Image: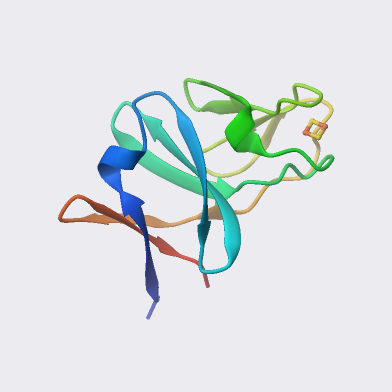
Length: 103
Ligand code: FES
């Protein structure tokens, strides 16, 4: 069974935006795409940039450093220069709170 770790209130993740936070000792980015919450590691796999400082457009997060992109739903790279996926985490919403499975 998965362990669920509480990350934030749903309200703390603004619509069509990304926020960074520490969850279970990890640097995590939370995204709100049309009211659906997604979670990935916050540090780009290309260099040392934080995706929460990037730009979310639809399901894609653009890295602020070299404009590589990832699909926030699964962490897959969608635009050069990123070639390696970022880790994405299962999300569960319960009573207005966001929980992540970090295993
Ligand atoms: Fe993210 Fe280069 S550090 S694209």
